Image (cartoon, rainbow, N blue to C red):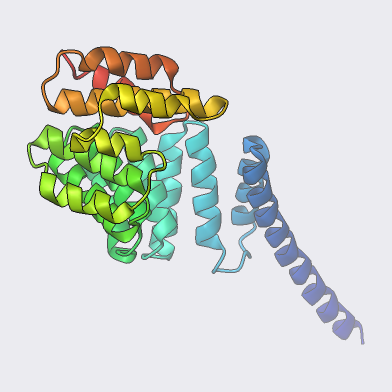
Length: 275
């Protein structure tokens, strides 16, 4: 009878430990969502160190902790955790994207590109992945492959006009802009809503003043945000066409755009490249 009670007690304790590991994992997930990096890191660490987290959750815990490491600029630690996740789950899309970001942070451009390529191989019909790789290529000045990625992103998500703008400014810089193809794609959008005025500018069917007037028609903060976008995209298109005033527009975009806008980050990057 004593042996039977001991066996039951051991089963109960094992179940409690497993439940604790689950609790730590989900506590880490919630802390990450809430922006509590310290709690997220400690919770994921506890879940991983417990040794009895269900195998299906272990790669997720590594990726969760890696993403928190990235938020706190601990890029080498993020890379190590993404590596650990991929060893356990070789076709884990989130792990490849997380590792790509860690490699970018560590300025390992070739490794980052390899990770982005692997992610696209896993989910080749995902427009957002081509957009991410296009942004990466654009930042490193590889405008021709960036243009190809933006074109593919638009093909997969044909209602997203911004992808067409990024195709235009990238292909313009690479000297591969297809005006006829661009015209056909813009016609397929069939909308007058923003950013249609910017697309019309690229098509030569609107002047800069027309774009700024349309931007000003928006309400509240939207008008200011559209002004910053107009400065950026008009500046970029003018830069592709050797217009001397392009840098001034990019400087205006840098000063006006919210810092979480991709146009702000891109303007900062390109100002360094413009004489």
